[in-house]
Length: 270
Image (tube, rainbow, N blue to C red; front, side):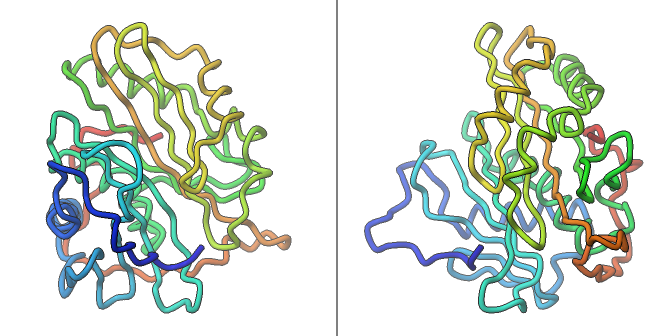
């Protein structure tokens, strides 16, 4: 996967949409709250947030999803040229709350990026290919499940249900044959909506995966009693044949204070 493609001249942001840099400023602020010190020295420029330590986050051109939809691409190591490995995710500013959308990305896909760089389980969980919550053949870095909705108790109920379902482990055979990156593959899990109008979706490297989404829908998760959405994110890293561990090297972030699951973010580990 290549580095962020430049926006075409006619790809203007939809009305009411925050400019890319304003949204990325919210992402930066959320990252700093989540992992104090991680944004030190970062630069907002063009359509990206770049760190002197080599990672970057960009906003892709708005091509679908409405004015409050943001497609983000994370690049953990921009030094790997010419095709910089990256993973994608999207968030929606519900009721126009772009700050909450930024927080949601940071607590899921962003947490996986931080953990990929650090590898000390400060930001996300790890599971090996033979673990109970693992994906056979892959090393899994999984975020917590984050709930969004009109009722906090209902959000927690669906969060816990998604965690208890151990989704990726149980539906792994529907999508692992389509994992192509030699570095890492981004997997988004989304479930929820209005009562009676529930959506279940798995995205693999930014694209909806029909077989995996159907498998998630068939898992008989409880329907929400009020508008509620739950999402989680995972990175799947290939395992070498000798079983020595994933090839992507860790680089400890060495932060003065790090966010851990004990810090009370309100999300549940998937």
